[in-house]
Length: 498
Image (cartoon, rainbow, N blue to C red):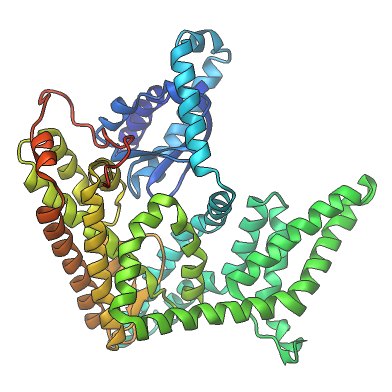
C-alpha cells in the first residue's frame, strides 16, 4: 500500500515539473527530491506546493522538492522509474514539448534560470557544494551506526545482555574505522577521478602498518589525519590521475596510470598529508572544545543565531567535514546540538505567526501541516513557507535559535559537554543520537531545555516584534479562502527584512 502511495506521489509530481523530457537529472538528499531541469518555465510551482506530500520547494543549482526524511528515499526510485517508463513509451516528445514553450514563457524561464545560477554559482559555493556531495551519502551510515552506539552504551552501563555488547560495538565502530576510505572514494568520484583509486589512496591512512613509518621525526598512527587526510589524499590522486591520462601513452595507460596514481599520492600522503591533516584535525577538535568551554553562552548564541542565515547562503556545507572530524575524534560533534537550536527558534516563530494571524486561513494551514516536520528537525517548509517570505519572523526565529544556543553553550561551559554521534537529524530526531560525559539523563535534559528555550524565545520575539502594524493589517486576512493552501506560495519573493 505504501508503494502505491509513493508511486502516486511521484506520478503527481512528474507532470508538474514539465514531464519526463524536462528532466536532466534526479537525485535526493535527506529530505529533498533534487531535479535538474531543461526548462524552468515549465514547472507549475503553485500546483506542486499544493500537493499533500510536498512540504515546500527550494530552487538552488537544482529544483528541490521537500518531501521529508524517509518519504524522499521511497518516492525518488518511483519517480525515476516513471521517467524511464515515459521516455521508453514516447522516445520523441519534441512536438508535444514545443506547444508548451511560448516565447514569453521561455524568456521568463531563461531569465529565472540565469538569475538563480548567477546568485548561487560562485566558485566558493560550488566548491562547498561538492564537498557536501562527498559527505551527504555517508549520513545514513553515520545515523545508523550512531544509534547503535547509543544503544550499546545503554546496555553496557546497565549491565544488560553482555554477550550482545561486543557485537553492537563492532557494528557501531566498523564504519567509523573505515570512513576515510569512503571519503576518498566519494572525493575522487565527485572531482572527476576514478573512485576506487581515491579509495585505495585513502585506505593507506587506516592501514595498521603505517605505525612502522616515521614522518617529521615521529611515527605515524593508523587513522592519523582522518577524513581531512583522506579528502586531501584523494584530491591529490585525482590530479595525478588526470596528469597521467594526459601524458601516458594509451597502450600503457591501464598499467601505468593506476600505479603512478597510487604510488605518488601514497608517498605524499604518508610523508606529508597524514601529519599535516592530523595537526589540522587536532586543532579543530581543540578549538571546538575550547570555544564552548570558554565562550559558553556567547559562543552558543552566535552559533545558534547565525545558523539559519548560513543555511540560506549555502555556507553551512562547510561545517560537514568539521562535524565528521569531531565525530571521528571523540565519538560526537559538540556543535550540532547548538546549531539544532536554530530549528527550535524557527518552530517557535511559526507558532507565533499562527496566533498573530488568526484570519489568514491559508498561512495557518501551511503552518499546521509543516509544524510536525519542524519539530523533527525538517525546517525547510517553515523557512520557505512562513518566516523567510514574511521577513521579520525570520529574524526573530534567529533570535530564538540564538537563545537556545546560548543555553546549550552555557551548560557546556558549566561542565555538561555533549554532542551528536551523527549528522543530519536535528530537533526531536536528535535525541537518540545524543552522547556526552555527564550521563544520558543529564544530556537529554539539557538538550530538551535548549529546545524549550528556543521555542519560547522564538515565539515571544515573533509575537511581540515580528510584525509591524501595517504587516498585521495586510496579512491578517485571507483574500481567497476557497483557494487551496500553498505551503510556500510566497517563497520566491524577496524577504522584507527591513
